[in-house]
Amino acid sequence: MRLFASGLRKLARRLATYVTFGLLVGLLVLILVAVGATADQATGGGPGAAGRAALLTFPGAYQSVLSFIVGLGGLLAVVYGAAISGSEWTWGTLKNAIARGESRSRYVVLTFASVAVIVLVGLAVTFLIGIGAAVVGSNLAGISTAGLGDRATLQGLPERLARGGLAIVEEGALGFAVATLFRSQLAGIGAGIALYFGEQFARLFLPDIVKWLPFDAATAVLGSNAGVRVGNGAIELAALEPNVALVVAVAWLIGAVAVSALVTERADIGG
Image (cartoon, rainbow, N blue to C red):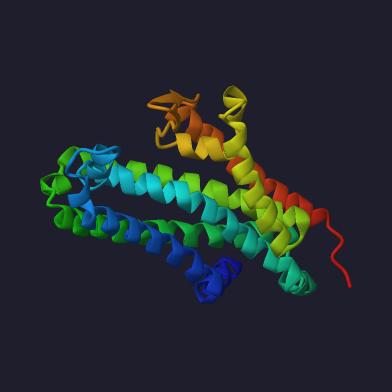
């Protein structure tokens, strides 16, 4: 418990925490407000007008905001997890902890636990700010917010937030594990980003295989099956059923943390 609390205090002061979540919040607010402010230009029913209106129409806006956070937040979680894990090696924090007699595996697991808590808190705060920005965007666009208090949507919101939180934590765990493998902050961030975009590219050619991989599974947890638009049509790519994706995401999460602990346990930390 002492290590966990210490990790939370340390992360609360880290610049990486504020930069990561500040970037996510800034982009989310910018997009929602910009869509609302330019709604008059879409009243002619041009391409994408319906999609822009749906983004700000409640209760669907709850899902839109959460999907955006999981989509972009997943990539930022990879970077954040890699930055925190990598700094343990490059800054010598891990070495000092081991010198004090701390268990390697316990230290790594509790460090990631503190990362997961910060990520979940960031998700909740970002979601609340995003909903506020969606309300502002709706008012700018002249779209009714009557669905803001939709009972069925609000009742299902805790489950969807929990699913979204799990998805982002799982992606953060992948970045954490990659940086642990490379024992470097910069290498971990670079490799984590490469894996993220590599999977997005590979899903165009191997969708039935890629759908079981960590980032695709995280997206599918919310029931989001992304399509690829070709001309005026769209090709729906294979995706896991949300409950199956949930199990797969949990497996990847546990596996990533286990790999991090195992690598640290066997690493030569000297000098």
